[in-house]
Length: 175
Image 1 (tube, rainbow, N blue to C red):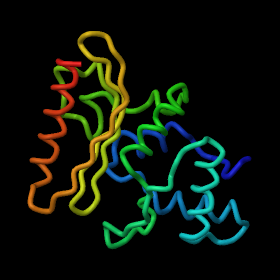
Image 2 (image 1 turned 135 degrees about the vertical axis):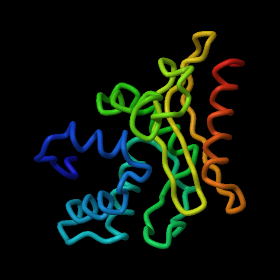
Image 3 (image 1 turned 90 degrees about the vertical axis):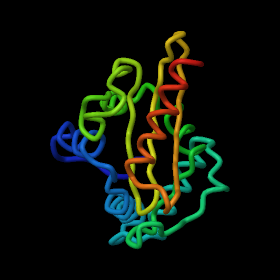
Image 4 (image 1 turned 180 degrees about the vertical axis):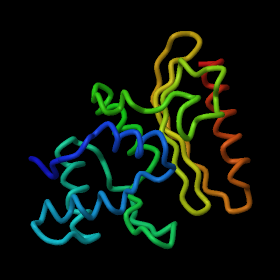
């Protein structure tokens, strides 16, 4: 089923969304997709219908995903670490995901540089939450999908990102 057709240069959009943004403009895409799906303007409820049908078609369990408003703006933060990992596994051959940035690019410009050829990730920031998800090839040659979400209002954004980096480097070295 076609939910939405892109009529502009996808490479520009992919770079803007995957490499240069800590927020993938989920609300805009979510409502737009919902509107196309239901032939209406697009609402949160329409977006949820698209999301639920996507999960059902791909046998993804989204029963544990709750709609939360962590940003004060978006009611469409429909993610869990398990969902993100399932999505990355399901779409590992999708050419769009080959454009996930390596360290040294976009939001990863100064992060994880010593293992830049072993990891592709997408970062995310929302209110008190910092996240990073992607693909990791460890020093031993094993391949992993991962998602780290840190929700701690007492930690600074820099400390959250440092913890994410430390966890990924540790996984790279020890797995």
